[in-house]
Image (cartoon, rainbow, N blue to C red):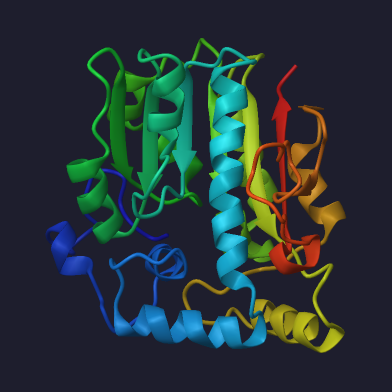
Length: 282
């Protein structure tokens, strides 16, 4: 999450020059957990190491993806949202945000934001909009929200005077407390009008064994390698939604949020260890 919103990082050359296959990246690791092929040995090693401590991590990744699908269906359907800002897109897989939204209204407009060059390459090749809608892809960093909001491609795609759904799924836990993720979310929401929404999911330590939770907290405090997950409690996750009107059923496990119709048996909240919620800006 350290790239330049204009398409290249300063002094780094083209996007392809920034791909470091020897260092794990969260998007590629997530792709590995989902059973994808767009990852490298470092990503697989990192993913396996995390799975050794949290054996149901792949279930968590799958349930987060299902939560995205249900959240977008609610936003595009019941809430009538036609604009989406999806930050931390990840490598495209089934049921991407624009596909779900444009299945409900082909005119939906989506801006994807990520900072991994592999993600951007795949997004530009695979995330093709409906003929009536629009998609755009920004090479940018969640931790630089002002730059995202000012990007000309975002301004060309989204009308910020009209409601926007801000999608922050499984990305806020990569921002440590010292970089104030709450201020980042506030900056993004402050730029959106009343009637906009926040949909977010976040990994938690609430259900982990005490020793595993302590290890995770220690790694986060120490800065850790790129992509370290900063697990937070339910109370800390709820803070991201301060001042917003929560959509029922509120903040809960992503496995339980409006999960009627999902495959049975459902995984437990312990297996998933991730909270999610959707809320409206009044």
